[in-house]
Structures are given as structure tokens and as C-alpha cells.
Image (cartoon, rainbow, N blue to C red):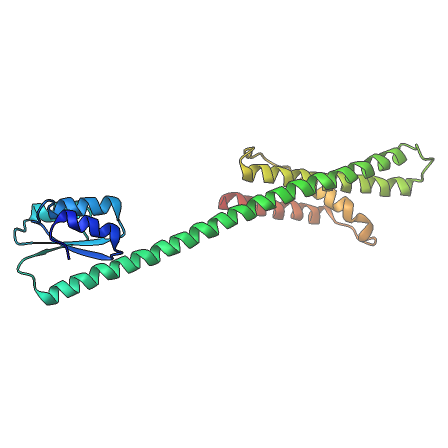
Length: 239
């Protein structure tokens, strides 16, 4: 209980309060000044303005300055209790919402950290894998050139296939690095048309030793190209 507005402000510094009821006409500082000061220094405290001189203008001004509610005299006790309960419930909902927002912000921050760790892992792993792949590729090329002695046609075919797969793995690693850079915003994406016959021919040649004598007919090959083209078109439409 305070006799005037200045005393009310002093009590705010001394006591922990949840709600303040103030009259519009109070000595030294009127209710609007008190509400303004509370909104600036103690925004977590709720305020209800009471007055016997209520007008729409004063009510709007009180709400603009931070009042939680507005009552006109004579005060009905039941209505006062309901209004107090209402603003307290609203504060509780606000605190709950604020807690959820804090949790979401924390979760979002953790997701960002995980994303950064993933990008760093992809980058490090790609660099670490490319070095031995380059060494293996160089050795295969030297053997193919006969630097380690003559090789048979069958051996050359297997080594050529190994070289193609090394190149494929290298491209995968480069794509992973590019994807990591795209996600981090270092580079942008450039869309371009792709001739599906090239990857299909490569897949067929890679599977050739495993087919145990079976062969793809021209019709089957054309059907592969058609199906892959349709799938690529669907994905493009989705994006």
C-alpha cells in the first residue's frame, strides 16, 4: 500500500511484486506516470488502472503506456477479482510461451552446431580420402603404361575399370565438398542439362563382368535412358 506515486516507485525497488493496482489520480505522480515508469523499469510487473474519471481516451492512453487492464469506479469486487485473475493468467501464458521460445532457440542453436560439425566432418573426411585415392590412381596409371612390366589385355581391362571407379569416387568426394560449400554459402548452385547416356554407359560397363554372359539389348538400354529421363524430369518439377 502506497500513499502516492513516488512512494509506490520506492516500494518497487524494495519488494518483489507481481501486480499493482493504481488510481488515475494519485499525489505527486498520477497513475499514467506510474504506469509509464513501471513499464520502463519493471516490465514484468502487471498494472491495472482504476479511476472514476474514465474516458475512452484515458483508457487507450493507459493501455498504450503499458497497463494490463483498466477499471472504472465504482469498483465491483467480483469484477476486480476476475480482472486480476485474467491478467495473472495472461502473464502465466506469456511466461510459458517465453519458455517455449527459449527452448526452440536453444534447439535451433544446437542444430546449427550439429550442421557445422557435419560440414567440418565432410570436409575433413573428403580431404583425407582424396590423398590415398590419388596415390592409388597414379599407381594404376603407371601399371597401365607398362612402367611395372608388360600386362595382359585382361589385366589392362580390370585396371582400366579400377581407374574409372577411382575417378568416380574422386567425383563423389568432390561433390561432397561442393555440397558442404553450398550449404555454408561459399558457392552457389548452377543447374545444367545432363546427358544420361554417359552415366548409363559407365554403369553398364562397370556391371559387365558380373552379368555372367547376359547382355542388355538396345531396347533395354533405351528403356533405361527413358526411365532415368522421366525420373530426372519429376525431380526437376518438384524442385
